[in-house]
Length: 381
Ligand SMILES: CC(C)(COP(=O)(O)OP(=O)(O)OC[C@H]1O[C@@H](n2cnc3c(N)ncnc32)[C@H](O)[C@@H]1OP(=O)(O)O)[C@@H](O)C(=O)NCCC(=O)NCCS
Image (cartoon, rainbow, N blue to C red; front, side, top):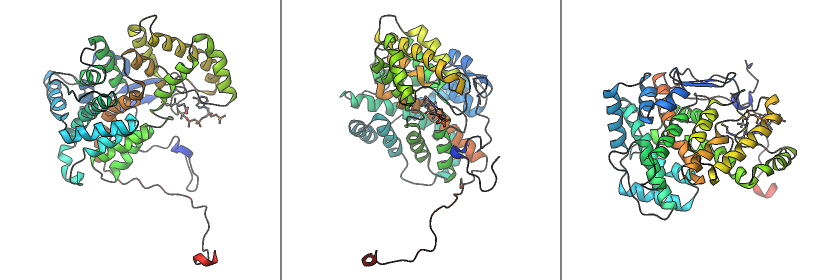
């Protein structure tokens, strides 16, 4: 515990909230949502069921699930103007920044979230639904395609994947999309983007301001951006036979292996094991995706040998890109898709933060600069 004048870099180990949404057990490599293991949930649930679980604290019965599905389907509507704005943003910047701008742009004309707190769940659900829709809008714009929106009956996963990869994507790919959405939906209050969402919530901001700030936090390579870096690394390595030499150079240059290491896990990240199960199911030998997965496995082997003694193990980002690759998602969209799933966590944490009093986050600094300097006008400096 810190004394009054001691800085804890990165706030490591400092509790910032009480939460009942998800539990990360770093020492044994376990993740659960509201008490249910991530392995059970990914294999058996729809993303919509997880929306209900995280908001309600329990898995839904059929009528509650139907209600959530309707809220998601109606909530995802975007105006023509917002679609156009997102499309323009998509052609001007990385899809992650385009998504951040697009999510901010769907904020209300008024800035008074507190007066609308009775609707905090419905607004959160609508924003989750709209974010998935916006990822699809941006993907179509980047690809130079006309806007083609979701069908009424599409699940959240189906909407997103069909908009990104085309309406004929197989059900097996939609099932993978669903599992990935669930797998990355929450990871406790302390990760950088969720902490960001709580800090912005504490200023009593609108939901879209909370969400767009969190997207910015997720974009960095130390957080969600690592999935993109990992797949580009495997592409650069090119073949399993090159991996040893390539990684030795990285170790010598003290470069970080994307997809390795975690502040909380000191065992293999359980999400990476789930993704490996999906990879074994979906990736077909002889394809580029399978080749990238084989390289990822080799990287895991070499890096584990070198780094595990220091507590560095594979995290979710080591293998997630290989599966996104296998369902034909363009690389620039791996992190936006992470954002689309984590939007659920951010919105539920926003609600929990309000429910627990929503005290403004206001830590302090230790000032180390000068004091009492004599002012001199510009001619005498
Ligand atoms: C996730 C991450 C930011 C956590 O970092 P952290 O808890 O702050 O740990 P630190 O940055 O203090 O690193 C501790 C040591 O491990 C090393 N290290 C951490 N991650 C490493 C990696 N992926 N590859 C090689 N070395 C790594 C650091 O260089 C540092 O070494 P040093 O003590 O000799 O300086 C870090 O592991 C990382 O950058 N990983 C790669 C990016 C990634 O996969 N991010 C997704 C996270 S889900």
